[in-house]
Image (cartoon, rainbow, N blue to C red; front, side, top):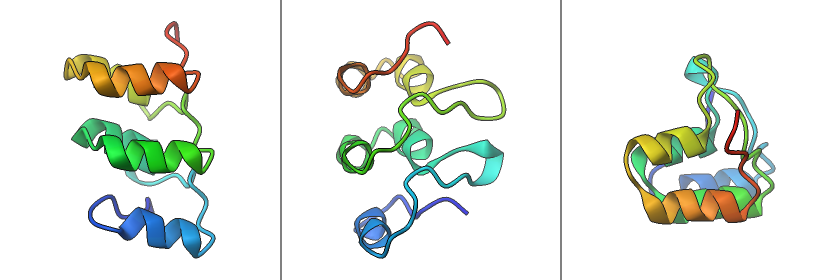
Length: 88
């Protein structure tokens, strides 16, 4: 089950030793879910915890794909600055 995305959930989960790359529904990680929701602060928290920036869900989509789909330039920029691959 993916970490909670709202509130202080991810911070508490990471402090408790949860894996930031834990796979949840749809083969998505918390980073992917945060990108879908446009939650930049949570994306930064997860990236700092070494979340896999290039993880792909069941459809082959990464967090960067979702940021681009939503035209979320600030989120896309952060993902690229953390090494997101553009050609996956």
